[in-house]
Image (cartoon, rainbow, N blue to C red):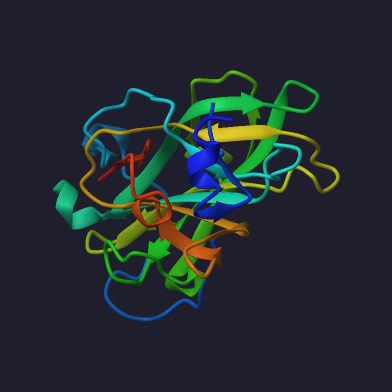
Length: 246
């Protein structure tokens, strides 16, 4: 499997492509407290796409926590954190959709595999090498199916529960793509690598794979950890955007 010889030195059970759930912490009072509400009228809204990568082209650079014997996908989560104020947002931001690229998706059967997309607020330091899942306060989630061979997946806010997410303009929004362990029933023998490339990014992207380890001595990746800390070279930039109106 591509780059497996390199990754074997640093990541037990992880593989590179040909793809842990971030939990919600306690809600805390204070600036940036999110609210659930309906979006503003369409004719009054400005649409903004939150993006942190210089290119949207998928390049075969991705990694995933996989079973080293079978090659099938273990539990993985992928994250980006967006500081809304950096994107010219000065009023409440209403999420309308989340889009992520796919490098490889192959279901064990049925032509599609399950996943979840989660949204919420992040209360930690921007660009931390890693952070605890308690820094994440989940607001909404959507259960989806990723079709075999899909180049991208777009999840409209109507699929989320609740189906309206509003954040104050000084909030830090996180988006997570959660891939379940495909070796635990009823999910069976799936392979997934989220889309990425080796281009530029304005902030770090993160991976969480509790069945895999990194470092010396090896430590399980139980918390979201930057791609750069897991695989220092070559660069890996997660391709994930969030669209909203304000």
